[in-house]
Amino acid sequence: MDASATPAPDPAAPAPAGPPYPGTRPAPGAPGSGQPPPRTPARASRLRGLLAPAGVMAVVAGAFGYVAAVDPNESGHYPVCPLLRFTGVFCPGCGGLRSAHAFAHGDLATAFGANAAAVLGYAVFAAVWLLWVVRAAQGRQLRIGLTNTHWWAVGAALLVFSVVRNLPFGSALAP
Figure (cartoon, rainbow, N blue to C red):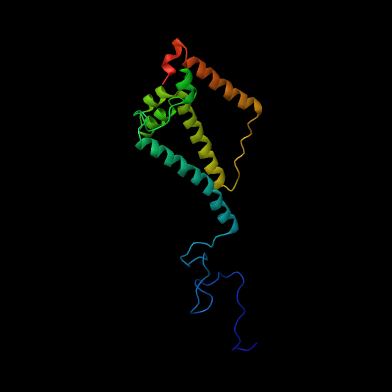
């Protein structure tokens, strides 16, 4: 064997640190580059999936912000409920704006007193929205399988709420 021959590289030896050739930079996202890894289609898809829940929350926050700024307890700002105006009967939504106003100001007792069903609806919305965000961040779709029985149960509960709040013993539920 010739003394001037270079030995073959050892395959078990670790790779040298830094760029492979002097004067070159490591690829973005490679160790030592100081840059985050490039966006992958899956990551971009997850970010796009978060746009819908973010948009819905922006609309809801805007609506609550408006109701918080424009007090529904002062007459002339919002239209009167037509069912209440023509029949004197409270519908399931009567007091909803006053409830939203109190809720936006952090007064949960007043919000619940104005419309208990609305406050329950806020809680259900928050839970479903949070689940939607978590699923979108995981790259999964939100699937809520409500059957006709569920919708009938919600309708029946709102009907019972409406009837009870219009009876003398249910006056605590009236706005």
